Length: 98
Image (cartoon, rainbow, N blue to C red):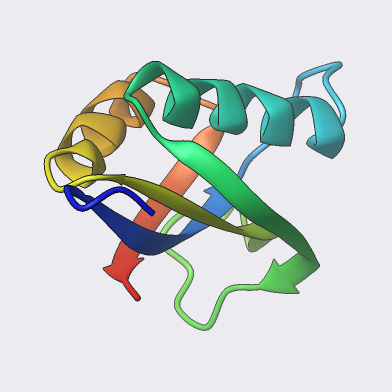
């Protein structure tokens, strides 16, 4: 690990309704977004489809959860969230420092 890098674990909720892309293709897209903001992916764990505890959209009651562990500079989580905000395949993003 570089002295200016930190380790992060990000949880993504992926929405593939109405898309021909598989979940694996969506995960590859998220990994490419992490690489675009100078992040290095170290582990990917597909947690599968889960139902939401609190439903905010009646048409979407559950989605696929993915956890990705990566190392990156301190400014990366904010940049990543901003890039993924524009991606309609990523429903929610949560990034935590390890």
